[in-house]
Length: 147
Image (cartoon, rainbow, N blue to C red; front, side, top):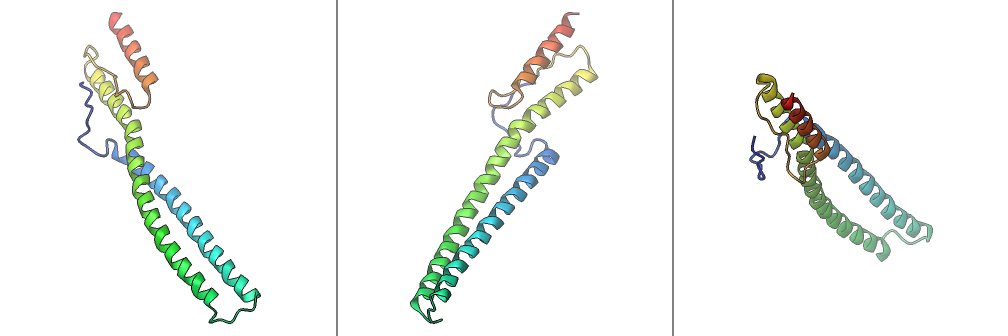
């Protein structure tokens, strides 16, 4: 099998990668909820300070707080959207670093199971995970070929 440096498919092992991405999405959603909850709490505390200072409801302080909160919310939502896209892109990238070698090992072992004398390779891309496993599989197969 030839090691292809450029992938043609985004998801190599879709079941694993989608499961992996679902976990990342849940983690990201929890992070967003904590962030937004903290933001609302912070601005509510600022409003409470105005109330404790006995400012009238139409005081400019409240208008200022509302204005800042609105701008902060718009900026935060924009940043979270960009972060979400980056989070998802890195998730696909790193899940490919895991799924690629597993896919390679599975295909090579399937080939070896069909034909025990077949020449198979367990080599993976240099940036993929499981480099040690790849090398150990290569050594084990070569040792069996010699016997």
